[in-house]
Amino acid sequence: MLFSGPGIFGALLKGVMWLIVVKYSFESLKATVGGNLTPPISGKTISQDFYQVFKQFGIYVAIFIAFGWIGTKVGFAVGFAFLIVALFFVPSMVILLVTTRRLIHALNPVIFVGLSLRIGWAYFLVNFFLILLASAPTYLTQYFTKFLTPDLQLMLSGFAKSFYTIVSYHLMGYVILQYSEKIGYQVDYEDFQDPSAEDYESEDADPDAIVLSEVAPLLQDGKLDEAISVIKKSIQQQPIWGVELSERYYNLLKMRKRKAELVAHGVNHLDMLAEKNQKNKAVAVFSECHKLDNDFLPPADPLFKVAGWLNETGKTKAAVAVYNLIVKPYPENSLVPKAYSRIAQIFNDRVMNTEKAKKVLSVIKTKKLGVEPSLKAGY
Image (cartoon, rainbow, N blue to C red; front, side, top):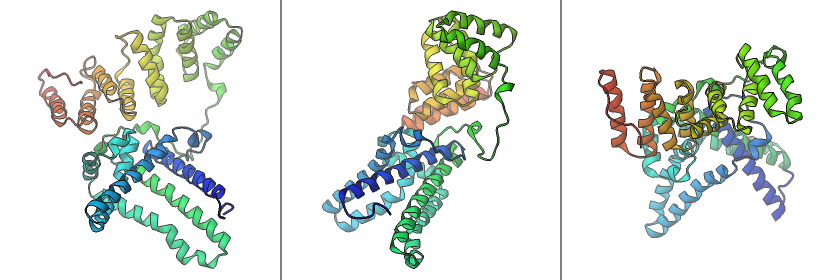
């Protein structure tokens, strides 16, 4: 409302504010995918990964370039028909952009059409709701804001466009969450957070607090080896309880280049990070420890999570390699069939190698029949 007047300055500010709204909407979508019902309100929301917003705009730019080219070469009627069909698949493209983080994948007709077919009739229902949400601001402007002053009309119209944009992205996030298996996107249901839940844990109840208080002055004086000794002595009496002390110990071992101790503690530290769903840190710890020791082998549960998180970030080859770490050392673990299934999904949805996906799935069948599989389910 304040910058609604003519001029390049007001136009630029409105453009920046709209970018922020789209970025927040995108973060809302990602939060919904993880089952997090808490609004993602923080400085990081609008300061990190802003290029994802431009990737979204890249979808629309590509569609309208294709529309212009088809309209010029074939005719406006055919171009308009193409535009309608393309806009119908935009939700599928946005979902692919979130799950793969790759614009090329999102614009691949084979992939986004196949994704829509896997979701099924619900995809048509999603489009119907998105049309309703997109038309809501216009409805308000036409039937309600005419009773308001011009300034209030501008304010309500701008609020409605922002609000319904956020709701639309929230809806697409819920589609990914509900149809994650069909989409091929791993959801960790431990991530679910209830904004009404209260945290009754206090720092006083943390058994690691005493050790941290002893270590703090040693770190200030630069006595890293002594700090390590204090933590090692406490571990002999009771295991590390919280992530903070575990991470402090891990970083100290890394700084002092105590490789053997680092790898040994890395198993427990990774398990703790995975349990707390600290994705980036867990992936980093696994990569560091595995680089130091090729025989580094955490339990199956954290490995399964790390593989899923690698797959989320587009590191499909690394994800398959980690899934294979579950398959061989833990043949009787209940996660083995799921690991094979994830590998098959990667080959089918990301690598576009259907035949390889079928071979991987056949391994599950042979294992259930008690036959030792000869297929190496990797790249």
